[in-house]
Length: 313
View 1 (tube, rainbow, N blue to C red):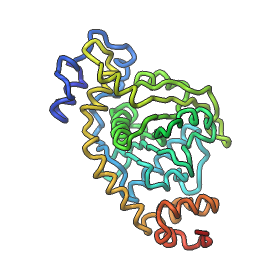
View 2 (view 1 turned 90 degrees about the vertical axis):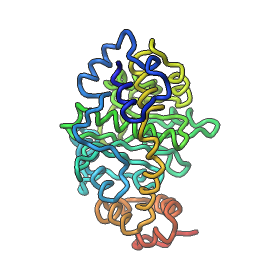
View 3 (view 1 turned 45 degrees about the vertical axis):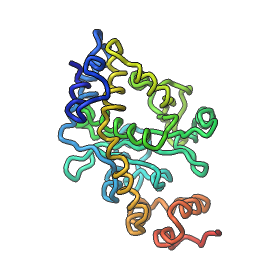
């Protein structure tokens, strides 16, 4: 029996299909087999619990891990704050998911939602490609800030965080899901139904970080998984039985969102995250500050950043 089916039975009792419809196909792909042996696509998180970062402590810990992981890989230059915080991390609609062992954050996966004011993180280098997905009012989201502590990289933590992110994307009606990755990871994301839609470019103007944009149309992916049967490959069955029908995180999305929203209603929490710890608001333009005031509400903004000039209504 496929490990995907067995985990679904344990987690939710059913993946919405019979076991015979979800059992391991006759011929497993070599790449999937190698990834499973490396710990991915399994169930062993090495004791880490997957959740949404709802408290300011978890958010601070998450963005410190992202900073350290990205500095290690040369994606960003070290920052005095030791945190990677951009305007997207200051938006209530951005969801940050974490893997925790006790109070320690050992894995991070974010999801940013497109907006007229701020767009998406990859717009700076790939705006033309992303604009092509914004037709007819489609909701475009970007998977961002993936960072895993070294000792948890060969475990189920990365794929569990992706399952969690996908549950949230489904709940908010995401139509197009994109991510920017190094060219060496293209094959991995192709297994998950993504396709490359850009040439190789540097993600940053400050350091050389060559990446491509991968995209999946969520409706198309759901249609393909609905048609998956025992002759389908393991990757499609993983999506069907563990990301869609058998995804336990889908039941927690609403409660998590409610808890996370409280942080963006708490001036003290926002000030600690965006002023005291990261000093991010001090680096924002007046236009960005005005847009953030609109997101948080003027009363909250005035308490978070009273040092800012009074913004015009």
